[in-house]
Length: 42
Length: 260
Image (cartoon, rainbow over all chains, first blue to last red):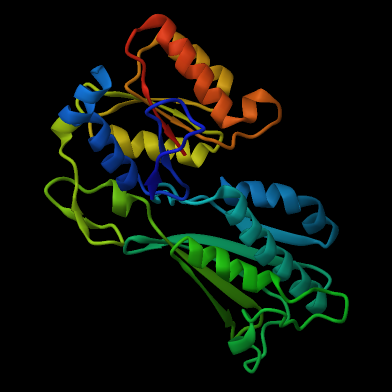
């Protein structure tokens, strides 16, 4: 359901409607994971 | 909100045809996730059909709209006191191009489209003819609460296997801004994400989002790509870029954009 989009700001994620709250939570988990935060800092 | 908006759109026609509508919102019903415009299209079709069925039977009539809950699904029934549906017609009612209206009265696509939309939303529609006359159409849609309200370590059916729900700890102290012009989506995400410990702010317009971004730091912005209105503030891609620039002006580490 999620995919990258080159038209969006860098590091943006795409979640197409209709979505469930659980879909959002799973993407947020990925975004907030330590490895993701580390790559963002770099 | 969807039914209120539908009734506003159909108000003039209902008054002109002396059709009274009985509808009361039910407090405590869980929200559903869906495209508001498509859901309005469904109710417009059902109410318009009910109105025509009443006109065929009598000079005035009544439509009742009832909401309810069945397990983790929300139901909405549109009932009229019109001509009713002949038993032999019921099985074909949702077939494309099937109509009982006079030539020129309808394409026969309305209910077929309604069924398609409802199924895309994971629901169903059933029609019945009432013994005392009239007809009832019941829409069943999955409640969002079934997805949002669960707590770790439960599992959810994602449609492609099971995934463990995230823990509350994963989200504590994180902040999210939701930019979406649909109130139902803002409410759903506010309730759903806040229940997992996230701090959630909401904006209905690009201007509101810009003000919030300039005054608070967010980890993630959920940005609706198709905002209502016209001009640059309706282009979600452009708005996301502007929010990013605005946020980077107050903090070197900007938010992650989640485009919806």
